[in-house]
Image 1: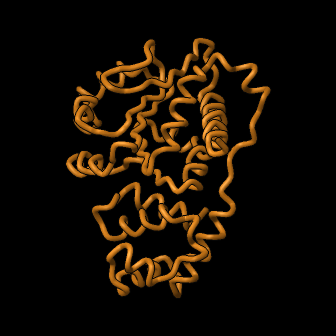
Image 2 (image 1 turned 90 degrees about the horizontal axis):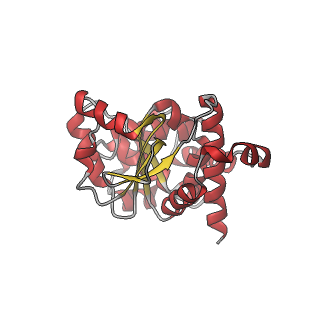
Image 3 (image 1 turned 180 degrees about the horizontal axis):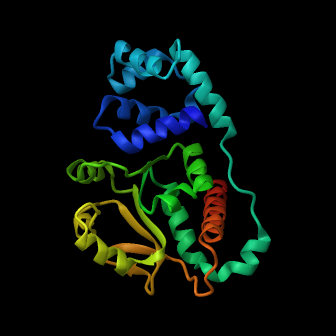
Length: 247
């Protein structure tokens, strides 16, 4: 996924405040429309000039707009989700509350934008979930902004039906809250109280809600290795989203 991944990284870092980030967002938003995408349509819908769009695709090595959209279209067709494992579900169902995952999957399907914040390792492991969201025209972003002022400003692009997810599968939300108070570079839960979007925390917890965050609990008393927990979470969540598409 060379081109889509590059667009994703560009949007993760720049958001919509920089021209390249805005174009990256536009193409991520319209992945499934690449077959009918043309330069004129892109110019009209973004308000960005032909020269700026030319510089954008030329920097990536494409000779023309069509070459770029053709490559994006090929990669879009290859987006995949994990094969469902009934063995994993039957033997490790105690790790998650299905009702919480179902609630999250339904919320995600109604969104237009999904922002992830937290442990990069955990976010990166949710590849199937991110791919199926992409296939539904939902733009995903990992908040990697260095400038704290810009980071907070970027959250205001989230609308009422959008979703912010903080994830650290082996950290209690109370621990995250306490750490954020003491670390000036972290998003603070108090900074998020006024946001109108849905807010979720994926990690260890003893309740269903905390300071406005809906919780997706990881109940890992048996110390299942982190990669397996994440693989199972990704498989279950992506297939719940897939099932929701069919309803």
